[in-house]
Image (cartoon, rainbow, N blue to C red; front, side, top):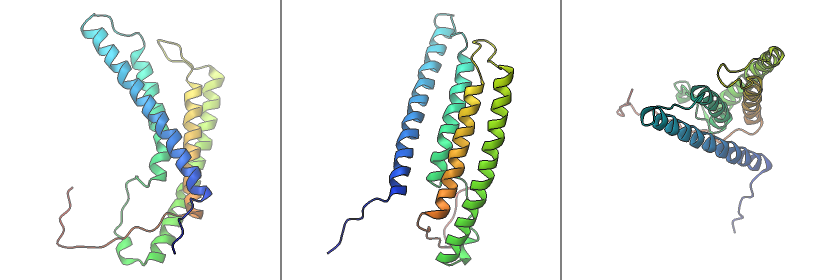
Length: 177
């Protein structure tokens, strides 16, 4: 008799994070697409571009990229080099993976702290965008929070690592570069 595996709290929390940030990224991408479409139509058909479209595009892209950062870390979608993995056992790969996630998590949390300090300085000067006069600080605070979430994701993977990937070397297999 086999029992169905019940999801653990970490996987439930990760699934929630994936859904929330994935939905936010989808909405941001859709908004970016609609803004660009409206600006292009207004600019080239009606000779009436949207005022501040470039600024809004920049802010939406910033938000989209930083909302996707924890998703990429959680899904292990970063660029990796696996030339060492071929000579390690499963236990060795797990150790290296945990060590890398620990180092990345600590460095990324340090980066989040510095971005948070920079956001405070930007809020202090009251920095705004040039055309629409939108405050910049909330976006930089968002960056800091998303970078911190990414660091926490890496530290979480130290405690609850995903299963090791199978790495096999096939000298006959060609790779695309």
